[in-house]
Structure formats: structure tokens, C-alpha cells
Length: 95
Length: 122
Image 1 (cartoon, rainbow over the protein chains, first blue to last red):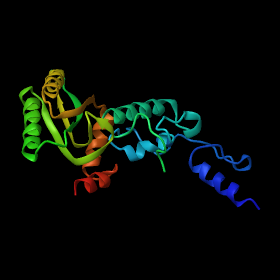
Image 2: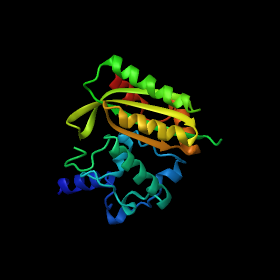
Image 3: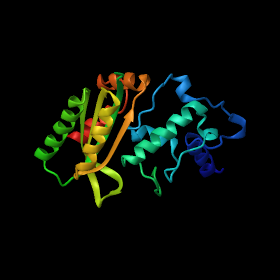
Image 4: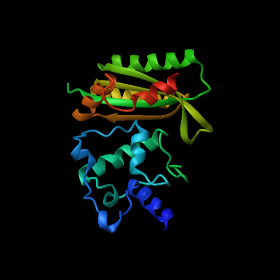
């Protein structure tokens, strides 16, 4: 069949991009669900979940984060960039 | 006088000796204490790679400090940072109650990626 296409879809699901139309899952705000009140700017590994390959912030519509926590994520990412824990611009961030 | 919690991270140049680094950290702690502040904790992250080049350096010694005190501590510390030429970057942020709580739990090893920080120290 077309195994390569299947694989890319599985990969994409983890990457917050659009899932297959027949298995849409409801997105949720991970901070509300797990009751995370504070996002640490000193933890670049965690913050990388909210960045794309170029090191740009992913939009809310992909990550499902609520507006309240998206503001905190963006604040944390900007602080992490200032102290050189995250790059301002980059290529091939995740690979 | 009202007291607030703050947190600061600064990066020292990879060229400076261990004795200088210790002296700089104790000097900053002294500045906090002499301005009616209290140092909650001091953390040495060790030599880490920077995400981008800062002042022609690709690595740096990271230190973080949590302290509480009146606002004058922050301005005094900022002046000291600007005078210190071994500093590549610094950041001072005010902490809200959730952040103070988080830092306390992180020190006990309950949350956060503490493991990665320790690995870098070895």
C-alpha cells in the first residue's frame, strides 16, 4: 500500500499538526488539565514542545493551549531566549 | 517595607577562573544582603553551551539566585551586573506565588528537569 504516507501521519500527530479526519481528538489545554500553574523559563527542553523547527512559537490552534497559559508560554520562551537557553532563529531545531 | 520574591540568572564568561567566579557570586550575595534582602538559594549550573554566540563566546557559566527583598535590591544588583565585565548576560525577574511554590518544589526534586542540570555539572 502506501506505508510512507501512513508513517508521516503518525509523526505529524505528535507534532500538533492536523490529524486524520476520521480520528480527530479534542484538543485540550495541558496546563489546565494537569494543573500546571507556573511555566519555568529555565527548562528549555520543556519549552521546545511549543516551538517549531525554526524556533518560532507554535500557535494556540495547534497546541490547544488556553489564552491565559499561551501568554505565559510566550513570556517564558522570550526569557529563555534572552539568557541563551533557546535560539532566536535557527534551522532544523528538532532533528 | 514591602518585600517581593525575585529570581536572577547570569552567565559568566567561560574564560574566567574558578576563584573569580566564586568571588563574583559571593559579592552579588553580599549586595543582596546589604540592601535588606535575603538570599533564598544559589544554584550553579556549571559550564553550558549557549544557543547562540554572545560576545564571541559559545559557552558560559550559568548561575541562578532566588532572593527576596525590597525593590532597591534589584536596582543595586543591576548596577553591579553592569559593572562586572565577566558577565555575558543577566536576567532579573519578579516571581509570583506560583513561581515561588514551583521553585521550592524543584529544590526538593519533585518537579522540573533537575536531572539535566545535574548532568551538566558533572
